[in-house]
Image (spheres, rainbow, N blue to C red):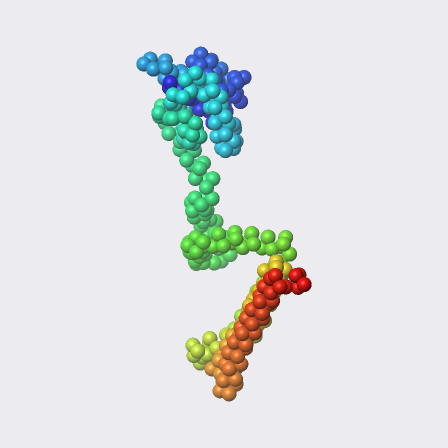
Length: 366
């Protein structure tokens, strides 16, 4: 049996008339089409219902039945679910359910999104799209544009550059009013550059992840949020201090001296920032009961690296002598090695003690 299935995904038939769905039978579908046409002659679903009746009457060489199913207005997921439930009702009412094939009749691409739901219940011979000849592809165009604007990825790709282009004229007027007419091109170029750089590096995803992690950390009471803020402030202060030291050097300044001045002026602040953030991370891991002794290596590594960079940069600037540089290099190396060895031994002994306590000869068996 061939089932001519008229689909009204947004339930115009049920919302605009008193017809109860699903509608099964040639006469019932015809009456539903007339009722919808009398209520709203411009509704495209009227054409769908009449087309279903027309196909039913045109097929004479095999058993055929026509039915109309509807979804709900609003959510596509709920609409697809409703169509599936009504289709189950239609199939249950047919006598030859085991040999039913469907010809789906719709009025555009939006209603055709329910085809996978129908295919999961009955074999589909084809899909017939009914549109007014004078408005061919109009609804499909509307639905395509709607889908594009609803997609976050496509929306960011199309609307953001379009918005920047539309801002060119007002930005130019504003800069001209402020007396900076030559800056308009630079500002616009900068906006495009920042957008393209952000899209290329995936900055929007990084920002979304950062906001989610920060929000989760605030509600979870993580110490790292505070320590990271403090560390960021210390890094800023260190950068300013490094720039001030560079400006205080007499000209001319070589490239090595520029780098050394920036490092020497900022490294103390950077070291404190590193120790602060690492201690915050260690505290969070301890509170989450995921602490491991090797995590304590981080602050010692920060101190060792900072001492080495301080000594090397000070030597190139002439602030420190060779003996001091040798002592710092040796001390930094010994600090890193000793911390690694100490915490590795402590972790190994604690794991051994835990295994002994959990064994059959442990304290619990005495």
